[in-house]
Length: 303
Image (tube, rainbow, N blue to C red; front, side):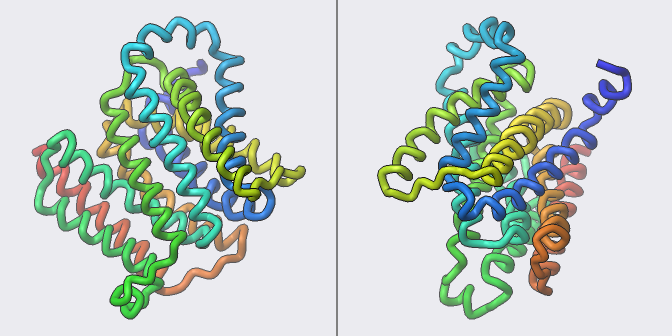
């Protein structure tokens, strides 16, 4: 690998920022995919293509890692089934009901969920400032899914798409925390095994979609969306994010996910012509401000 690329590969800020840009663009692809290809089929084809690419280029290394994977087979399956497949299933279902702006901003809740899961599962220490930051971020998400309306909050009538996106965020937060217990192997190889578990899970989802009579086969536009989703948010972004977790740890890497709503909002306005309302801007400020507080609280805790 050239020295320049090696430097970028070893710089957490670079790999994590690139990953979030690709995920932000994924929100645009998800919205464009509506009526072009059925959601479960899109997600299955995406992971199948990703897996095939990895097998072609890494088959020898994958075979050599099979003994290590067999020892942690339950963990590998959970990471692929709930982290990869779980996130993408709820994400694409959410995309059928809400905007790309909302899809992006809601992903800002992932770092908060990462810290909460870390606290409950791994007993990770958390400071008062971090708690305040998490509360502010989650308030921003509530503001977003309520459309800035107090009456919606009072009557608990949230957009189903935004609620589905919150479930997707919980899946990915669990996946992020799970990466802290990763097998010692290349992120590329680990992604291949996760992808295999995701394909198994999504095959069941696609079969259900077919049985319900809602399967929509892709045309040219649909296939282009599949290829984009397989190469960028599935393959490259996941490898970059796993590398970021390896370099910076799950909590710190999770904070970078808050760049997704920033990039997603910009892409949605520029590419899709979606409108940014005041409550979107306020929600974004709450989410990012809360994560900034949480990061400051983490630094104070370390000191």
